Length: 266
Image (cartoon, rainbow, N blue to C red):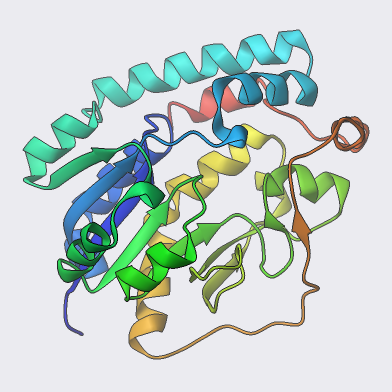
């Protein structure tokens, strides 16, 4: 299997995305990829803005658990720094990978997008920004996204909440990026067991800790021209409303548990 040249397109996020990039870059031989460039978008959608996230977290839990979550993030960041997962700049220098920051992917000119495509065999995204049809067409090569549900069930925003409000199936899916959100061809899926659902923190820690392993399976399936089909119902969800948060709490959904702190040191 020939080594694929990859461009990663991601958020400017140091809590989940940056550590995941470190694990991917360290595992390039295992994944049989060469990371040619990392493009970091500073774009903030409504769902990723600080104001909305604070509102979201407040609605998901009480002030005590919100306080625990903030402390958790601070400890998590400290551990990542002491382990050497420091910054995008450090990642670039240590592994000799070009990293470029942009305000918005969809503001790039057509020629800029085509230039990006010329450097890679495929693109992999970890972003909140929805790519326009123009970006996808000008890139002209396969773009892969990870989504935290068993697609086509649970397309859209905040799938963890929808596990409790709409009984969607928890999982991780790698799929082709097309103009319709989370609706492209599925290359790899894995169901997430109930033991990983006890809190939102544990759910996403499990997903990002295992990202590079599931990406390996996705890339193998692409190489072997294998796609995944299932009979799950197609569903799409936008931003949660107050009634969704109420139902989330009533269904024993949780932002964070005290046990999540122990998992930081494993």
